[in-house]
Length: 128
Image 1 (cartoon, rainbow, N blue to C red):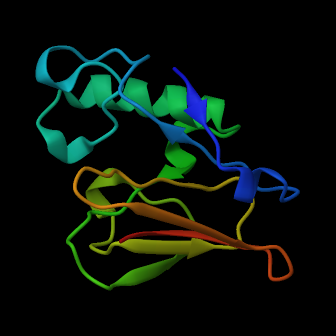
Image 2: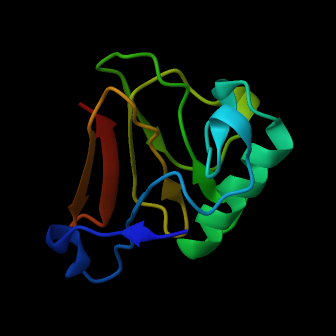
């Protein structure tokens, strides 16, 4: 599994980020290999294992790697605590000031936008 980074975010103290491709996971078939999308139709346990690997690489654990149920909207949510996949909000953006929470975005036909405000201690992401 390879994490790509943006030079624009890499120099910000306390902000860890990454872009992951498809390699390095455990899923097979059309979902091979690093499928992190619970809504994809892949085996839920394999998706959980893939997300756990990404979470470890980002310095947190799988329950703290959060994604929303993406709906192609302008809706965004403030993340104050982890949620379960069954309770993921329907939105396309997230922001948090809680340390240890990783905000994830799955992209196919949209471009993920990441942002950070060092002074406010806020990170966020949105699908554009």
